[in-house]
Amino acid sequence: MSQFDVVFDSIAESNTVRQFFEVLNGYSPVFYSRSGGLYEMDKTRSAIDAFAIHCSKLKLNVIGGQKGRLERNLQFKMNWWQTTSQFLRRCATIYETENTVFLVPVLDVRGKTIGAFPVTPRRVEIVQSEAGNLYLRYEFSNGKHAAVEYERCGILVNRQYSSDFFGESNAALSPTLDLLDMQNQGIQNGIKSAAAIRFIAMVSKVLDPKSLKEEQERFRNLNLSADNNGGVLIADNKYSEVRQIDSKPFIVDADQMKVINENIYEYFGTNEKILRNEWDEETWAAYYEGRIEPFALQLSIVLSLMFFSEREIALGSEIMLTSNRMQFASTKDKISYITNLFDRGMLSQDEGREVVQMPPLPNGAGQHYFIRGEYIPTDEKTKVTETGGTENAGD
Image (cartoon, rainbow, N blue to C red):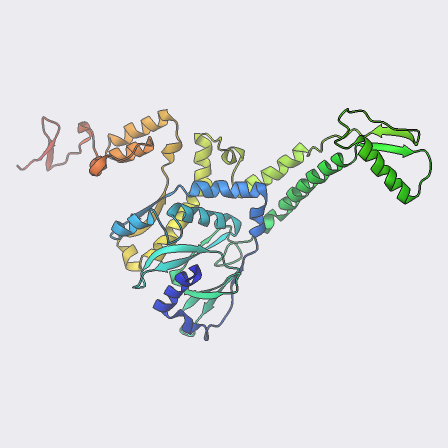
């Protein structure tokens, strides 16, 4: 059974999606995948991949009554083929490259969503059945089609404007990509041209094309082949002049290259330090808040809606993607952070240990919270004892 069958057949069997194919009507709006070339350029791929790598480090937390087994599964695997880290990285890559991410549910035998899988369709239509139900109808590059209820799917959008459902294309970056492509071609052609001609030899008499070609071959084999290991060039009186060409390496205009790079960095909200992993605490914090956190927030909401019913969400169930940003802080800031929050009961031992890359304490011993005695609250029913504890004022 193919991956396509595993994903979509389970949905069709539990929800009888196939019966709607004959009565679907209305084919607007439509999404087309056009931005694949964006990922083929080295500079843009570096910017996209840096974003995706950092997003893959997000931690998935399940909050509410469904925590238990669901959280244990989703923290490691989002579906049968991808770990959670791979899932996050794939979503982030599609998010930047296509500006629209389509997530289809992975169901168990009871029709309950137990995972999600990001698909890359060639074309997507939002269609409606005669009963008024909305569906996402996917068309893939292999010619296969599948339709899934709109409410079961997840859609992440980036740079959304004209469409009510999908993100924009990356056409705004096309002029910069054209310049980058021309620069790369110019470098290649410049290097080839500089290496192609090393000598000019002027023949003293007129030769027909055939004889001229033969003489060119003779001169090259005699003087420019690997057999001439002495480094001496010999020319007879057939030539009135033999002159060496001063080959200079082709150098790209630095200012023009800087403009191209800056355009790419601004479009993807990144910079040279992020791409080279040379960022400091402030640079990372700005990048996280500007790029990674909005993605994490949107994906958290989308996954929550896919996995939980309205009633479960009303009761507090949700999926939250978080990142321990203190892992990227200086040692001094980490110590200050742990000290200030641990004393006030806002940070457990395990959470503090995580900041300094230490494993949790065994048997759940590090999940407790502590507060300093002088911070114990009092009210009319509670008083502070001599030992620093509390007792009911009426006892």
